[in-house]
Image 1 (cartoon, rainbow, N blue to C red):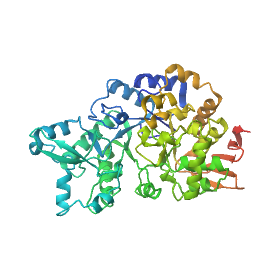
Image 2 (cartoon, rainbow, N blue to C red; image 1 turned 135 degrees about the vertical axis):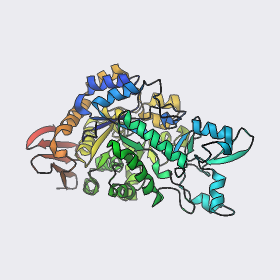
Image 3 (tube, helix red, strand yellow; image 1 turned 60 degrees about the vertical axis):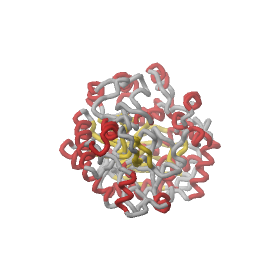
Image 4 (cartoon, helix red, strand yellow; image 1 turned 180 degrees about the horizontal axis):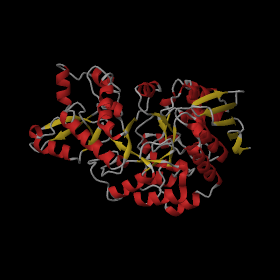
Length: 485
């Protein structure tokens, strides 16, 4: 089904039940019409990074089910799949064939061969200046040695984990793979493709190899053309300064709102509404909003929407107010890759406080765009310290595994009931149409009034909120929908 203006759930295939089929059952039985779409996090066979190191896309990991299960889910919800356009696992046919046959492999141009890349750039490259210029996820050059079956060795570009080898997106063989894979995804029910880590995909000498213009636009356009006959869209994923997503928006792609999480936390910690109001006025309608995802809460995304002092204040308050949120959980000690993310559930970031949490979700629902709600957030979940310590993986603090029985229990909590009710109402009410309008006022330093109207102005939704005392009132065409006193 086409993308609908209804809230999208973000979940792994085994996080709110054992597999895709059971997840479908849980959604129908306990979540109902609060959710209209599902971002099913990577469900392909993978060698690491919780699915983000896939080695093939033509089958579903048997631990999660099969294509029939995915397609059945797609009959009730619009779906988003992940495509890792920047990299693929070393277990892939491409890597294994290249390792075996070296230059005789049909995939000899599928990966970015480090030495050849720099030889083409000029003699004596890379220099230390070249390496320092690269936008890196590591404290060293982003390359990894490969030893071929003939005994020779080279290096390949390797931005992320040891299993995730970068793809040469300029190569013909890679583009054939892109077309085949993306076409298969939409035929199996994908209405939206999330392009994971796409900003790293284009490599070019004398740049920082991140969001390289104009080549990055050519790459996005190539993907768009593949999907156009199927009416499927792409959602480029990028964690960086808000001006980058805004550029993507200007090219008429859906974008993520990753500014909202920190801005909302600042608003609820400080009681001041001016920063939130300013951001909502700047935001496009063609976007998906987030408070939480499978990763940590992004800090860098809010830079210059919040001042450096306000970001610092929010981060410190998060560790002070948050329930069991410790700095070490976002450190190298807990295998944290990104120093600009804080690992916590959003509910625990607000001290497991129901009133503050429901207000945060009210802000998200009234923000421009379509709300995305992570499965832990949908159930107002607290930090999972047991899973964190068991795995020593920082992001697992926000990746609790729910059984069907747990979900049945959690949906009875008042804060979860209220959230589900709000989402159901929002999904049906025309004032939130993406071709409608938003008006934002701040009557006082601590209050905010957000008005959403449909295109004709016939339907009006209003949120009146006081961020200092966590009270709010929501009305629809003058009738009270919810009030928190």
